[in-house]
Image 1 (cartoon, rainbow, N blue to C red):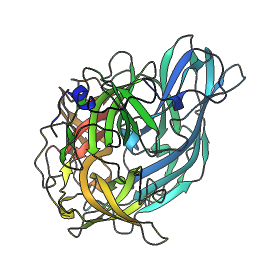
Image 2: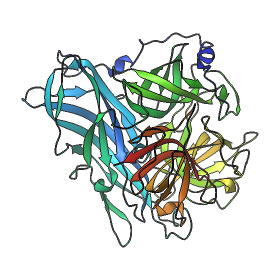
Image 3: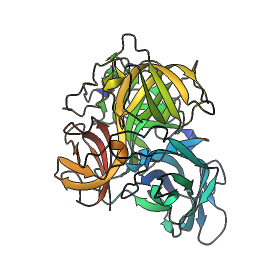
Length: 492
């Protein structure tokens, strides 16, 4: 896709004014158990990957949140943090590299010290598979699920002091490895326990090292949904699972005139499907980094990771990592959840496979762009699929979808850094799901657009031996670079 900084011109074509004021929508304002105060605190979510990776491959770790609250050290009334939506569902495998906006209290947290933060989990479902390491993908019939109906998580140590007029943020981190029990012989996940010791930790925002600017707390990126409002100064995107965000256009905002799924020119309009990259600011507002339109009109879209090498030209399998339900006439409705195995049948018509580069070019040559055959899709790749028909899963048969468009999008994966320069790094010890290859090269980008960094500053090298996670286009183990990175997070 061609990119330009002319998003202002693109958004000027939208005639609707914003229904909400600039910044976070009214749903973010504290309405429950609120007290007079003047600190603003925003909360994001992230996940710590398993290190080193086991033979078990975690394909999805779907978590449904139902509440966050802060407890004052002196006792008294807890401060409830309104979530960004009443039913908040996120896949922790995506949060190895990304951050998700959970919610915030705007100018309404009493100054003082708080010694406890509690997160309520309505449910958690882990989808995993095993692999002998001989080839990429899941071994046949190895895809299984294990669930936890509910949990209440409180970190062992937490202390935060908020002052009058302070604007700050807290990142809540879930440690995937500490939450799971894995049988070292069978490699089966036998239990998930988000309430286990040290599963949840918190860190103050912004991170010590990053490519964030002064006054910015965290990246909230690849936020995909339906455009509900657009103007020359801001855009609002409503997801199906994580609420909505209103992001303000800035002079450095990057936009695209191309709808990826439709593979043709389009302009930003209400009702369009789009992915936005944003930054969360100190004051609780969002700035728009990049606007990436995917489809001219609302539709059911399932995004997921490919689980095995396709054996035919028109069928393959994924595990769903994100779901967007059409505004009208959805064929999916509430019948498909994050983490569900899905069998896909292609009915492409005149549409072809396309790559959503988000302007990160050049990218290596592959057979994917322009193909119409599932045999050009690789296990480990993440694809967005526009759904035309749907059959719900039964006890023995996974959900079935027919799709008319396939878009290569961004895989989230973590591994050990084996070598690094300022422009590339190599990862090893990836999940065996990615095959027996020992080292995968990842390309980093400077300029506009550029790779976002968390735990490292731009122009410096990742630390060899540390764990890194990336959100990247994946082109396969025989391609150099194997990954084109939109985001990299280094764990200390």
